[in-house]
Amino acid sequence: MRKTSAWPLSQAYVALVIYASLYPFSGWRDQGVPPWEFLWAALPKYWTGFDVAANVGGYIPLGFLLALSWLRRGSQRRARNIHASAIAVAVSSSAFLAFCMEALQSYLPYRVPSNVDFALNAAGALLGAVAAAWLEVAGVIDRWSRFRIRWFVEDARGALVLLALWPFALLFPASVPLGLGQVFERVEAAVADWLLDTPFLEWLPVRDVELQPLVPGTELICVALGALVPCLLGYSVVHGRVHRMLLAFGALAVGVAVTALSAALSWGPVHAWAWLSPPVSAGLAVGLLVALSLVAVPARGCAALLLLALVVHLSLLNQAPASAYFAQTLKTWEQGRFIRFNGLAQWLGWLWPYVALAYVLLRVSRADPQNRIGP
Image (cartoon, rainbow, N blue to C red):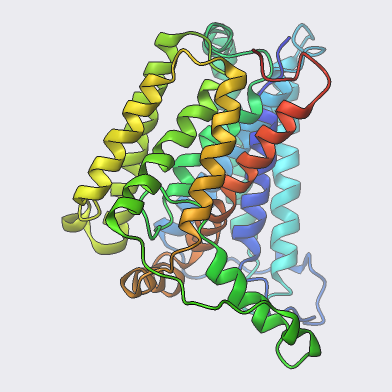
């Protein structure tokens, strides 16, 4: 029985729900009322269709992933009433999480706990859990399992989770297309703020020269590496040259589509393709060609190349500053209509390459041959 990717995905989704529910994590205070008081509060007089859709839709994936995790447990697959128990476990777990989030919101000045939100969250989890049970009964999940056996190595769930999160990480605007992990300037500024008015500020290293914008050639390399990284990550767990070629084309198509969507959300649909400059177009083509040329490389070699690509990519990106035009774009997300979504996509965009780096290092260093990247 192969380990399911649904469980780590559900854990990642729980973290995203917690972040979205408690953002911006500031101004905590005790109002002198029990945190569960919202359960008996009067129904809100005003609500919008967006609020209903967000509260229901936000918990559908969680209910789906939790129910699927229960259904794919090896010891439970042949148990009687497995579908009913999976739905019950998923809904009760999601409802408990929703209750905790609403209760904690009573301590935040910018959030309002609501019994309606709690009920809608539970309803969304129920819809997701029922959908997972129905897909299991219909045999769709088993067909996915057979597909996964044909395509992927034994323990591929870590890579699959990272590949599933990669498009969401790309949604947050990046200074360089496909350039995830550009955090040096922000980390430097954050550390300086934390050490302000302390003697430790003098210990902070000072750069001798200012960060310089990327020249077109370096931008081309960054884009090519950004396109190559998910391909190499997939190659480390995918069987067969044809499968790898299809993955490379699919990854590039998804990366381009999500980057265009991010640009459309930031600047409007008219400017969805404004980011596709000559260096970027050339970088995408180079990244695809390099990826196709590596389809015959063994998984261990792909892992080594992935480590090298990530290190070089992050090094080049973090030697360049964010442009003033890009900083203005961030204000649209951080202060405007995307404020609720900003934190989730931002952290994914910052952390994804570093988590991928840690994952590959962990995979190649494990002593258990069943969990190591194959030859």
